[in-house]
Length: 266
Image (cartoon, rainbow, N blue to C red; front, side):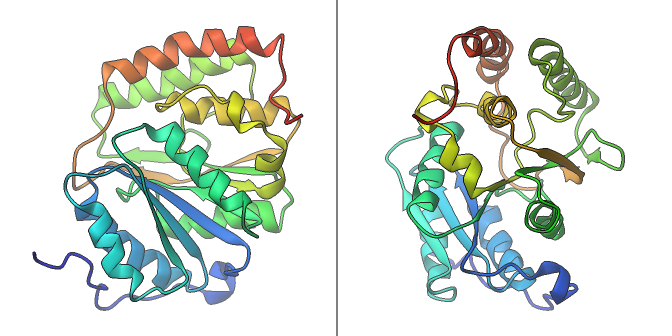
């Protein structure tokens, strides 16, 4: 089989002082399902930009052998690139929860969520990190809908769906987050340590809403950082009608249940 994981030539690193993330404290979690075309390019770019970062790929038994691509790269990024292989397609939310638990068992202080498809700009990892590590925020969100943020290459109906979904979430929850469905996030360890991860119910994209809502309910400080979100160039989107339905109905249920129970770990 043709190798998919060559390190791109001409790769350069931007300002090293801005981008320095120490290996001892930072983990980027990337869930994958059929992302072979993307993961082999994204990982070398991440490590070129942030030489000390650690990355955990959580793969749900991708038929396109995404995991094999990651395994090939592990020989290059020894003790920095990790792979969790799960049986079957179990959903975005459970992938991140598994990654969070893995991170909490180790010494990471800053834990990222990031997509594999280049929708989230690699250069903005440093901005989210600095918001938490330097500016004292507990959660930093790469936001499409704050001033300076934007979306490229999405059809108009998809932009409107995403934007008004966030408006809907704000109306129901009163949570002051402009991009509630954003999937590019940095958490300080204390947030995940405080949260009872067993109480996060969503498994699809609404998982992103519930995580932000749980952190906000527990009083953690949230900062939105403007990013340019670019639609995937390779592979297929995982969005479907079931995901939209889960979010629309689930937000109402989530808000109601939060009146009677806390997200705080006992």
